[in-house]
Image (cartoon, rainbow, N blue to C red; front, side, top):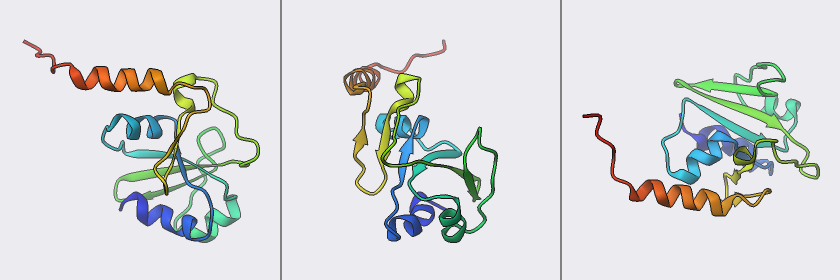
Length: 129
């Protein structure tokens, strides 16, 4: 199962879907998807329960709700779109709107990320021998 199958019901109902934290960083850097995806949405728990089959509640410290399918997990954090605050750790404040694929950089880390991404792609792989 892919992101589209999970996110389409939310987007169709006009809710926001943003990759955040490590998931947004991986997308920006062009890295493969991890076995979990971190998601922010302006949908609340009742909406998630209505639109997402198999929603579970992993605990507020982890996420407001989660869906598991085909060896992948999506962890949803419900946020108020008018009260978006960046995470305390700068690199993890990056988010990406899933529908438009645009990144949001609340703490102006884009220049650093671009430098890291470009620097990593120019280096040759290191041989262990």
